[in-house]
Length: 321
Length: 267
Image (tube, rainbow over all chains, first blue to last red):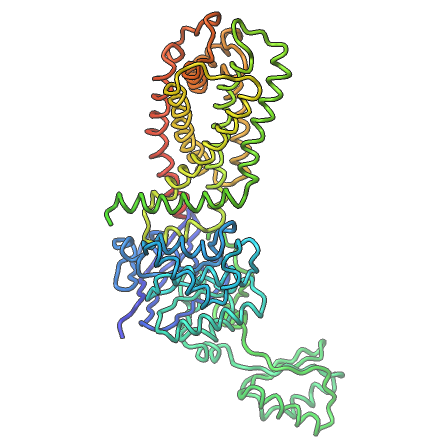
């Protein structure tokens, strides 16, 4: 399978701030690549270079077989971009926004209008289509912005934090839309701060920190590096802590962590919810009172902590877009 | 489609976008039109009753000044809108499209011409109500409006340059107000520049706005033989000098704004 996106050794500096420091990635055609990392890790800078908005200081990149610097103009006809700042005009209606984009892709007047209607319908915006965007919800704006990226059905699509700032429901609905797109064979590069989002949408994930990829793999492979699922329990007395350790030792796939003052235990397990019910069954059988119990999946912070030794939110403030 | 056709088509698309924005957000247009209306009424009735001009009414003297003041204010919409768009990421969308890069600025300045036509028409009507009259042939009067609009278009590129250098709407508004007020008051817009004290008189007589105002007065026939034109060269040749000023502004600020635009959006 040929690669739709290839980046090698991308470097971008803003004065003393190194935004990208040897960014490498390859995305085979028809797959979804998730770039996962905190603010300031270099995700947006990468997208801006790959979409011809920014020139790298070093390194090179090809998208759809075209060099992002030398063939920038030609490349723009083959890509769609939807950013974290929904780039739509408040005073224009949804339909007018999409028509304008169609006209700027040099579709004819009629074709641009027709395409706008098709996209509004596909993104469930038909009713709102003739209202100014000013009155749209955050989720509707993002859908419209995404629709704008799809006006010419580009073979390669860049989604820069498509759901950041959305409520869970709007996020889920946008995920459905993106999944449908992917099913039609579009190559997607997605950036996100959410492990869950990368998990749900991406075939492969690159974890980014300090401007380069520090870990690469499927969602499962990354989670395995972090240690997989954990059961977290809290009990009512210190004496119970020891009992819990003894009872659940056969279930643990690694070292248990005990926080004695807080009366909490974390047990690494495999098997997800089944492991949790089994564990609770054992504890009830032993007569140990459990105040709180839950299954915890690895989060971006866990991945980060494991891979880099620092918390995702400890990162330096993002100084560049 | 060749490069020029593309630039024109994309420029028209952006112009249409901005025109729709003006239609939907009348507050911008309202501010630009209302302020000069208020000024026409204030100046005509408050100062007009006190300022004695030889051989003409104050309204006739005032209106060309108000026209010029209006276009310098309206032209600021270009700058203001650009700073707003810069903050919203819409330029990233534009730049990721296979469109002509010049279209954003040509479209923006072209749509401001629509605002300028509207506001000058409004001023002319208000002027007629307070006693302003055209005393020249329709051809000269039409030329008068064209000279005004040419300067307005050129001035939009000046505000675009300033806006792209400053980048935030707050900064732009502050600077625009601080610069444009002295610019219009240090001219022959409201008072006879010949009666200003020494250095101010020189500044006022060589100001491009004075040139344009004098040129407009001549083309509308709002002059009086009892008020001689100062000897400064641009005022003696006000109409060609106005056109020349507009061309100079375009030659300097079109490339400058274009370069600053590229720099502002490629970060």
